[in-house]
Image (tube, rainbow, N blue to C red; front, side):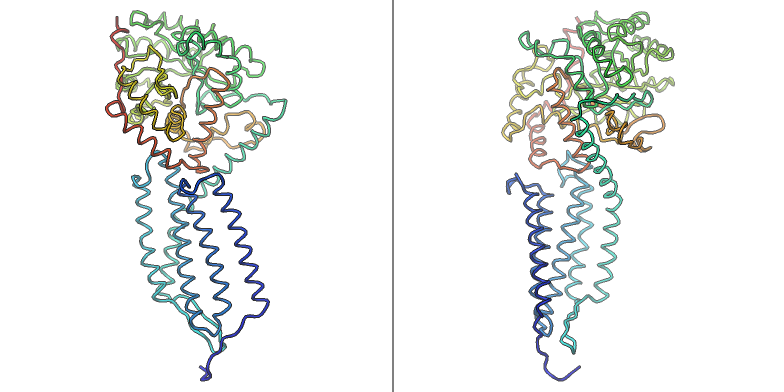
Amino acid sequence: MSSQPLSARAPDWQELVSECVSLVSVTIVSSLFGAKLAAGVEWKSLPYSKGLVLSLYAFVWTFVTSSCLLVSTNDGNIISCSLSILACDVFYAGSKIITYLWLVEKVWVVQAVKTHRLRTPLYILNLVLMLPYIGIFILMVMFRISYITDQNTCIIGLQPIASIPLLVYDFRVQSSFVDLQIGLDQISKIAKFTKKILHRESQQTSKPAPWAVSKSPLQVSPISFGAGVFSGNYETVEQLPRIKPVEAVVRALERGINLFDTSPYYGDSEKILGDALKKVSNAYPRSCYYISTKVGRYGYRKCDFDYSSQRVRTSVEESMRRLHTDYIDIVYCHDVEFVDREDVQTALKELFQLKAEGKIGHVGISGYPLPVLSQIAAYQDEIGQPLDVVLSYCHYTLQNSCLAEYIPSFQAQDVKYIFNASPLSMGLLRSWADNVPIWHPAPPECRETVAKCAQIPKAKGIALADLASRYSFDAVKFKPYHLLTGSVVLDHCHLPSPPPEAIDVDGAESSITSTVIGLETPQEVESAYATWSLVQDRQLGIVETSTEELECIQAFRQALGPWKDWSWESPTSNEMA
């Protein structure tokens, strides 16, 4: 070491220019990306994940700014040299922590969108796994290297006792996230690319021929078209003219909705739906969509039920005539809680016979009481003739989400497809909650409570129907074949078939198959499609659910009090008369 005193070396002009260019570039990039990220969002309501990204931009800018100042003065200056390594330690550790927090947040958004982050075990576990970084940061500060050489050069770094734990920890944490991140990125890219293709093709005047849906396994769109609304029971006489069956059916098919649900019990629904589908058959042949209908119930009261073998067969044949088809994809025994178990077995036996004859594709049951549905599914499994489908209604809604508790048992009973109908609980969760249909089985006290609870989302600028639909639609978890429900995707993109993890060897799915929602007009179809698109983007991690909406859901369900997850009597005393 030279005995001569060290003198600081002034930076040359090339070094100054380089540092200025770096600072200006980072400032411009951070400002542009930050402005785009926060566009249209008030700072007080800025989502947490966006706040993390903005914080990362700020860290990068501050690091570059401090580096420009310190690098310009640290040769021959022990103070600047020491500050340089401290700046590296602080900003490196800070940027890593922010990045890891963002990854933890993304996992939460994808896997537990309805649960507050601090109530999610995986989220808390990931936060706990970040605690060792505090100790590593202390090691980085204590065992840093900073000294001036004989040539007045500043040397900075970390001793092995600090650098080795840092490298090991970073490698371990990043490898834990990399598989998930790759999967999310690939699905997000497919989703975004597909949406661009669909948008571009929708602008063209000529549409390609629709693709034929898979008969086995079923690949049902996440939204199913509930044609029960064509009965007129949901509207007043003045509102009936607004129902536009043909236009609604066309828009649904254009949007990739590929299942239409109806029943002889729904007034003229089968005839109206069948006539609408026939009118569009040149553009959309029978092979490009599914139809489900029901047997057994033909009126309001128990005396209007007939589960006999002959009536079941006749009913299916009548439905095929009204629907202008020679086969039906799914046929349910309608509202099985109204009849004796022996009658249900009789009807199911006949339906399975019709399935063997090729007249129907899948056999199922529908009803309201979940225990009854589960008991019948269990019996069918025991006798070696498991149900293909179960249709539950009003049991995965903002008011009552009990269906979630029964999904594992239905799967254990070899039920392949689980449908959730009526996300708005037969009008109880309409945006005008004080105008529930007069026939609705919910008592006045329940209706009044829901009407009061509707003010919670309204105060946040969220319509009750929108909030309820998002909540219910989220029960249908994204599956790769959801991107394949439009003809444009298959004919032009040649995307791969669903991977094995989406559907098992028997065709069974790991979540609710589809949500059946009543759609009367093209506008209602567009609204439902937009809601599902938002839910899908959230599940893919493209966008996140706002904290405000999550708090709104929690507040609404808490405010329901005794009506939360409450089920009404079915059948009612009037129906049993």
